[in-house]
Length: 271
Image 1 (cartoon, one colour):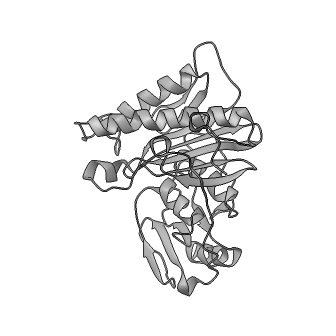
Image 2 (cartoon, one colour):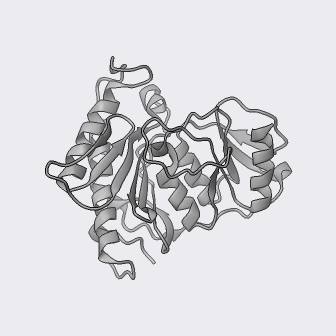
């Protein structure tokens, strides 16, 4: 079944509001992709450490589209903002450019990540790989998919985790310096939203954040819904709620293809 986005067309059983939101998210990702293709300034923004000029450019474009559609936004770059005069129910959590350092250095692993949060939690998510054109999407209670995005047709492939349940045979993605070990191999790609999507798709068997509380909600929330809709949960290493709409909050996400592997990764992370 193709992913339900209005601009993709085709039959769907997902309510129209989800199609509209995914269509909006594709619009945001498309616009940011255009800006990245034309970008000339990959230097620091001068506003805060670790922020690039392109982060502010992409954030500004995303806010314009989302506010025009009536949504309040929680962004890594600009915090909480709202459309003039109020708007629709829910908040869009966004990282306009997840993996900014990769993008600035020409490493082809960076993304735009968006998630609509309503009164029941994460509802609609899109993670768009801006280097390859591949996109991952999910709608709460309806499943998760991958594909080439708007230009390449529907996101028609359902995500299926690997089913790996043994640490010794697992290929694990990490963020930060590796602690412990015992897995077959590990990878550190540098864009957590995409890394988590690889677990949902069965490319990686797990992911563990090795850094102490380094991730904001924009880093993982969209991908956490994609993982959940593929049948695997994302948890915080310290057992905290991952769904937070606080710009200052930080979490330590861990995800695995099976409960057995999840417990093994949590044991490594907790030392």
